[in-house]
Length: 502
Image (cartoon, rainbow, N blue to C red; front, side, top):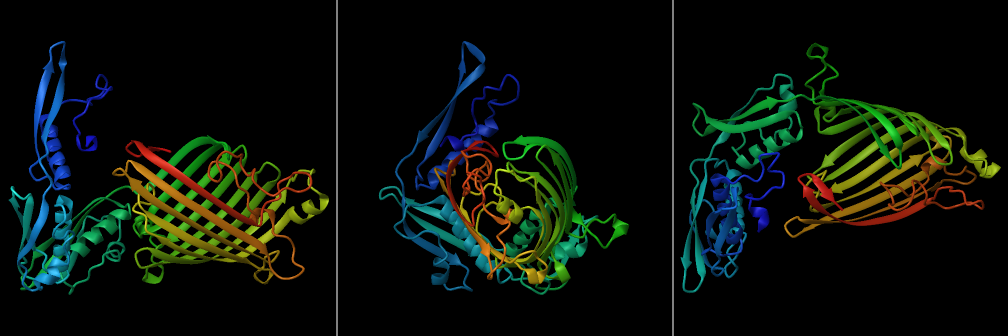
């Protein structure tokens, strides 16, 4: 209940304007409390607020919420008036509650939205759905009456876009799930707005439809306010895995490689550069992404990279590039196919390793491989998920026929699920990873050290030093595994806004 009440004390009120009592906030708290109780069926709920001044602290007040709950109401009847283009039985099936269940305010709102979505598909963009409650105070039951006024159905004449001074018109239109001639569907119009906001090119996107001289047709309008898409960041950090690292990042997320006259902006592409210099690693990565290759939703990812990394027992130098194509299949699934080329030099391996192992693992080698990725992702948020899951598998095939130094494969799979409890106060994360690699064909050389598995470190297996978990040779030196299995269970909770503890 405390989550619904925004009126609160703050220990920082002597520094910031936090913890101040405001009548407007208190009135909003009353509405939030009412909605909370109505989701549990307490239609007789009432609340009064008493504000008491403290005689010994004139700048402070005690705020008391006096609550009368009553008893929960169950649904006795669900009635529908209007909306005659659909049979009543068909509309009743859209309800999120049933007769005999405890009344729930949120489910009533969800039922209204379900009705609107059904009519929206046919172009009834001005539909109105109102509800009336008829409670019986003696039996603590309630009738719910839905009154539907659908109005006239409309088709789209034109889709108008304004405010885009930098972003090309086609970049916006290709994200919209609506076309001229189709019904004016508010659900799809709002989905288009969400897609545009997800591009992170705009501060805001406003939508509305307007009348036209043609009967039965409306124009759909998207008004856009653009924001800066070029970002430069400079920083430094320290971690147990990477030691001290300085970082420079340059990103243009609305790039256009074909248009120098607009300063290479507005084409919906992404160009980025990352440079890092540290005590144990140095990196330079230039990446380019085209989300609509050949004008279809097929993403092209390219990357050129240079890495130097000092591991505990040897060092590596990498110079290569990646090419990849990724296709979204439906709302949750994707498939990716790519090629990776990498010239690798392994050097400075500790002399405590056997001479034979050092001969196999050190020196220059070439990785030339095709890779395949399959993924299903239903998470509600990519950065701070509270529900859903993501499962994926990656396959890699390195071959001498492709120019590689040896023949080997790699197979990796992962699965992560998220569940929330106590109204998202606790988030349970259960995940696991599995992997295997090995040589192919008879007489082939060993799998290179940079393809093998090592666990340990803050992003792998906590409680162990970086790359400390591995098979060992006769001298207790880590040699890397050809298979791997790891799992994690984590419970996190919010501390302040985007900050979480685990």
